[in-house]
Image (cartoon, rainbow, N blue to C red):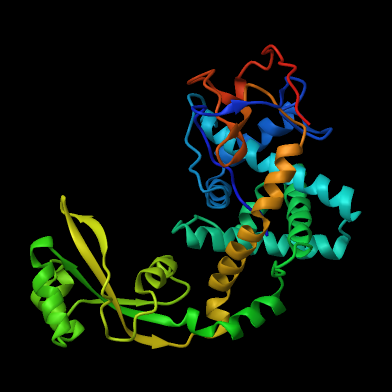
Amino acid sequence: MRRIIVLLVFAFVGATAYGATSTSSAVGVNGQRVSNNTFTNELNAISSNQTLRCYIEALGGQAFGPGAGSNTITSASAALWANMRVQGLAIGDYVKKYFKYNPNSAALAQAKSSLEGEMTSSATSAGLTCPGTSVQALAAMPAEMRTTEILDQAMSTYFVSRLDGAIPVTLSSLKTYYSQHAPRYDTLCVSVALVAPSNLSAFSAAQAKGASVAQLAKLYSSDPSGKAGGAYGCYPPSNSSFASVRADAGTTPLNTFPKQYQVINYNGGQYALYVAVTKRTPTPFSAAANAVLADIQALNATTARTQQQKILFYAAVSINPAFGQWGLASNGPAVFATSKPAASDIAAASLLTTARSISYK
């Protein structure tokens, strides 16, 4: 798995600063250092290539906004990338130190393919339509950055494989998981009813009397689909909305609205949303593979969360103040966006900031 959990905290409110900040390098973890020049080149590559930026945003869960100058990004985006670099370095150091693992050429080739797949699945899950492929995104990275990202992927994959309860991210494991949970990947055709608060009692009474999904939607739904009996479309696992549709539908039997509803905002008012699955169609593994991968990654993320937090908490981390501030938030250690320079060019930011000598191990 690429990024076991991304720590995205971009405000210093409520955080306790610790660790070390340094101007001798952009990022340092346990003696491993990323030079200011290397880090700046990575930021420039991300900001200047739309395809690469799209997939990095998908992995990090945060948009890379433009800064004040040409080919620059905001301080929040620089902190996000610093977070991702810290995680990669910390996990890699841990794997080398405690498992004595160094990936061979075959493992690196597999990691490259795995990274491309994860970039694709992350973009799909995030609903992003990137202008190019993940293969093109990886190719757009500077050579040193590409080598580092593939190595981090190999180390992260190995790390997860050694955790109790983790599912290896391999083709055979994905197929096994799919065969054990095939109904989770059925293509779902759904109907909805968007019910105003004033109609909830009548809706419930009609539901109790056995009114069908189509009847309920026609009588009480404020959504335009109500005229067609609430039919809202079909969602295969490859659809970017599949995960949310699956969650909304829950385990309610076919052609049945659930008793419990969700409250959503619609046209300036609050409404009760009911979702019913009207048809389920089995999906072959080839069409569900990305959704299976996303589910396994989510499960592994939960399994790995505690261990990663320990690794990050005890790591000796240094961040150049031009790119962020290492601190402790309620959900663990993270790089916070620096407030200075507020709107200046990150690539041209002065690297002569006074270093702080606070350290934590």
